[in-house]
Length: 113
Image (cartoon, rainbow, N blue to C red; front, side):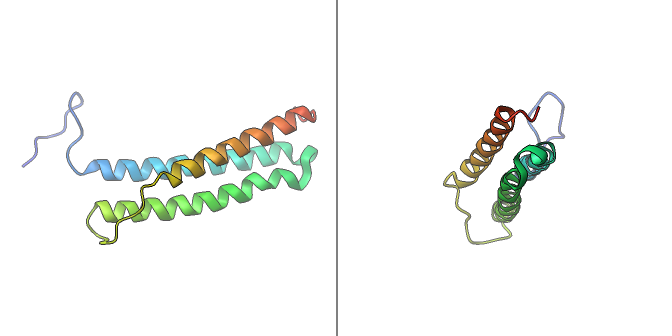
């Protein structure tokens, strides 16, 4: 039997998996939302080019949701096949962040803001 959770000590066993899955999902949704906001703010100056980060964000967000669900299921003992942990998901999120930053820099250089 595990001890009750306190605010000073570590979290009880079993919640790390849920927290990790939720953190990945929250990060993916944040990047999707920021790409939509960026597209809205820069569409007048950049046109269709401002939608490139949105398309990339939708693809990466869908993939991150699929990957985080698979990792959650494997770590919870529901799925037997292990998921890859080779660093592809962090790389994809970092690449999307760079794409958003570059789009913003192009918009600033063209005088959008």
